[in-house]
Length: 142
Length: 398
Image (cartoon, rainbow over all chains, first blue to last red; front, top):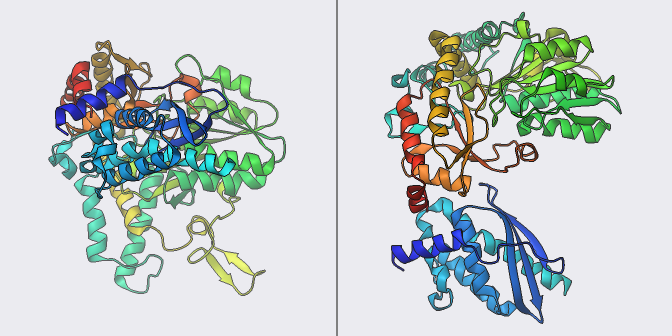
């Protein structure tokens, strides 16, 4: 991805994040934060019949974390749990410089070079750590 | 001023995070290196020349600290790992055994975690209440509000001399006078005040004071617990071990040494203590009054410049100290810090360990600039220039 497109995607999702709003009580709620910085987000997940129907978020976080959350939500909507887990694995591999399937990550590819800024990797991973927790919570309560 | 004394300032950086830690001058680095290179033995083992030299250097720092704080006795100066350990020792070693169910501890919502959580722990364990003195519109502690907060159950008031986000200087002398009229002890967290203000513990009449070396140009991992000697005598050691005992035969026959050694178990941070002495000598050469007035002038300059930028909201425009907390409208504090870092300007973003302050000021996170005497108007100009253009910030923050 070229630097211009990368930047444009991040800024668009930071300034106009998707689904940044509180959710009703029937959503699974998890908090996700980085110990080494001040990002702190609540992520809300609605799953019906193993399909992700909705994801929302609230809280304060930096441009990378906020845009990563917005992008993640758009990717996850309508996906099955196993598809979501596959996205998570591939996204995490991309951030950690391991082989990954670029075809499925769409806008999230804007973080394909975030490894160059070691201190921002956790920002890009933050919402995904949250969704992993939320999915685990769903499986537990199933 | 004195920028030439700091090797770090030879780098292309503008360091504005002095509330977190300060840079070290050659005088401090050289004193520590001298110890490690030329007389690197243990203290209190004076059987040979270099060990005696260590003793003298270590105890010399106690003299320097005593003079620096104008304490009455050398025994009132205890070396610790830093202000955090000092405050924990005060809370757990002196107050935990003393406080009884129903007693009250007064703190404020703008305290640093180190002057909050040790009290929380005691409150839970001993059924003691934590009471927050109301802050005024500037988020300051006033004597009037303190008067309102005091009850017959109040046993201790624990406050920072200068707070680490709002940067307000507390009227400690008046607070001590009021407290003592009600037989209340006063603990001063001096982490942000001792490096910047002349501190005279006899004049203030505080009962305990804690500070860290690294915030006053000294090394990390060393600090001071000051306590009035008659109180320190009752402070129960939190660490037992080598160096602090007189004799021991079995569990019922352990005899401890006198102050200050009793409270300094184990091999101390000798290099750190020697570095602390060098740091205070260095500050004394510049003069604490000169440091305070220089910082105030620089702060006024910074505030005046920032006030002219419409998208900047200053949280503490009125405070006296070199601490300035602000936000850039619509941009997360950390993104500002990341943006400034691209220009090698070092500032802190976050809640600055004052997590209960957010309910008071209504914002969770801020950018914090904290000045020291080696900062210059040029540093401020560079910061202001970078913050002036919001489009540039948005353009470059990722």
